[in-house]
Length: 379
Image (tube, rainbow, N blue to C red; front, side, top):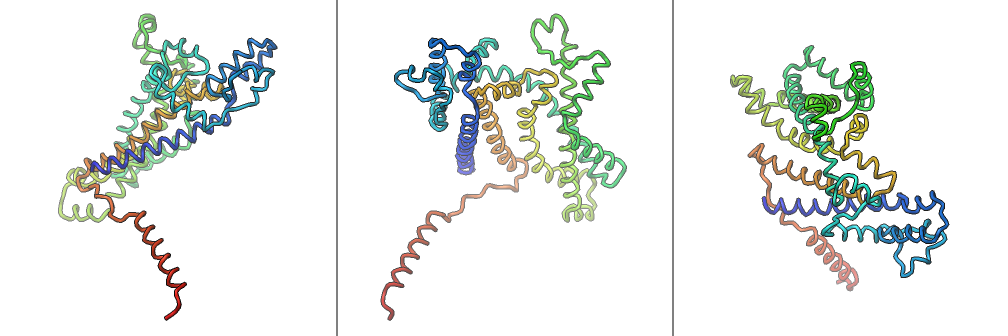
């Protein structure tokens, strides 16, 4: 078991490295130098102003470092880019910086405006507002979706099952960016604006907790509708698969009650595939709420990404990628390990004694022997 966990952690680290490397190279290659853009927009001819932009570009590793920055004067530097691989090496080094891990944003006023000391502090100040709307949505949609899916599976072919299927298909086909404007239009008729109230001392004093909580309900409702259909459909299919299996039919023939069959067979067998879907699904909700956060002006983590890409804030983009990649990869490991606890029949066997390296060496030796036999005179 320990060996299996260590292997999974090793592959997880390799996966994380490959993902962040690919993302960094793509962003570095196709994003623009924000300081070059500012220089071209201002159109200043003052060497001091241009030199300031050049030094900033060198400090952020956007252009190659030189002994004398004045060689870039005259706008030559606006068409030059540092090698993305070299920039990635600098970024890896910045991860372990004591005061400013993961570097600094190009626009350092972002940290000052948020009252943050570094990029991780800045990111988590926004992430908590994403959690406010995604965590209740996840809990409600998971509990309600699984419950309705189980009932639909037991009532297969009934009017209830048909109604649940129609509901699921409708909201699977209708994306959140279509539902959200409809709900906003309805709420505006009731004088409820699409605004997410941030819980602070000022808003609590002026609006009270009632108005704050009321402003959270519409985005939570939209996310619940969007994710509920997936839970219902998946759970229903799993329940039907188990109910039509041979061991359940044998259990029925032995006279076991519906409750005994459900807890001994159905619940146990659907818990494993449900765990594999439910646990990672929250990561998707947490990282993919850009539509809802935009409509309701939620100052969440999606706002960081939406603002970072147009300005080429690669350090903000990479921390966001790094965080959600780690969360996703290690959640997958947690799901695998949970299988053994959900069903004791599952065991992680030891690795095979067959080694691919040894097989390749044996193949090479055989080929060499065959070549020697072919060259030797026939008997």
